Length: 130
Image (cartoon, rainbow, N blue to C red):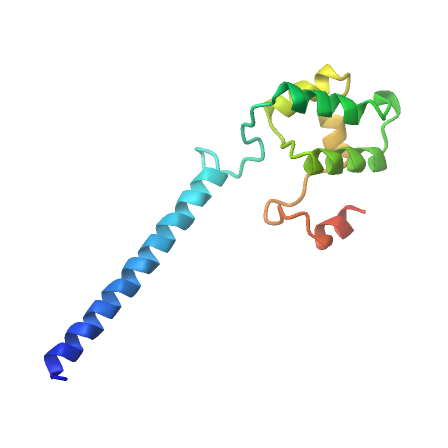
């Protein structure tokens, strides 16, 4: 091969690498913007439209407990059941909890949400919560 051909191939490879890297960075920042609110803070209150089925599931989960005598273990079980049912924090969940006669702040105080960096519900988080 001629030196110019090699140089052209190297430049093309460098360009492609930069292009892929740039696209990857753009995708990451888009995910960060989606995860963070408009003010740059992490928002756990992502909007989730609560269907009638989801509201019924929240009521069904909470029906097993007494609001007046809620314990940390109860709150942990409630939050685990919400996660298993795919019910995320947000205004819809808050309204459904209140409609069932419970205080969402009390549940959150008894069993705080996982750390923002560990939304996976990993064993490390579970161990910290116990």
